[in-house]
Amino acid sequence: MRRHCNVLNSQSGMTILEMLVTAVLSSVVVGAVLGFYVAAHDSWNTQQDVSEMQQSLRVSVEEIVSKLRNAGAGLPEGLAGIVGADTNPDTITVRFSATSGSLVVGSPTNNKQAVPIHVERFSDLSEFAVGDRVYIYRPPSGPGEFFTITKLADNSGSGWKEVHHQNEDLINNPQPNDVIIKLLEARYWIDRSSDSLHPRFIRQVSGPGEVYAEEISDLQFRYTLADGTVIDQPMVGDSIFAVDVNLAAQTVKQNLTIADATGRLNRTAQTSVVLRNRPGAN
Image (cartoon, rainbow, N blue to C red):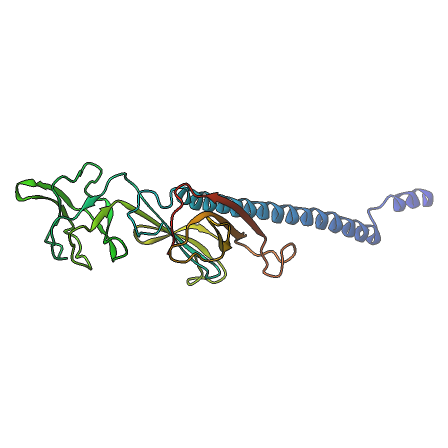
């Protein structure tokens, strides 16, 4: 009977020591699995941020390049195709005509919205339409401004055709030989005013500015002139041969374990555009 009891005692449950060892091993395994999951999750999030950053860079570069290829096209004499400012981050304005034709003012009118602009009676209105944002300009270097066409009319019996701007007064009174073109003016810059930690790439095309891409942290331009000189800011009358474009972007979220002192990963993109129309600058 005593021998049988000893056998039963030896087959009793786990000892406290064994339970502690098991608990420690289990916690080690769970900790390792959890650490792997956290690392994998952080890596996935980082890759998502990097992908979004690279996408922002790509579309921003493509947008600027698409406008630079047309810089100066169809502009009247004295109106610069490129306006650049070395402001670190830089800004740039690119101009070109969206149509092959233009309208010439034939007789003076005042600037009030109720008074249509009188253009010469042989003017071709077919390339212009109600709702177009156009630019009236005084060659060779006089004032210019944008307005929206609200009506086009043929009043040739009175010696002119009419361009109406009934939603807005003009700043200047239209004068004979002023030119109206469907000007596309695209301006680009970096905005840090609303959130200094999350800069935004702004595009302004013949109207109010809009956020085109997020987390673009820098924008730089260098200009190669026709004589081979490379400068940071073009001056009035410079003949620009090519523009070097450099952008930088950052990830939206911070990750201090893998990023630099800013807490964000960074990427850059560069390209050079040879200009087709060799526009002047101002």
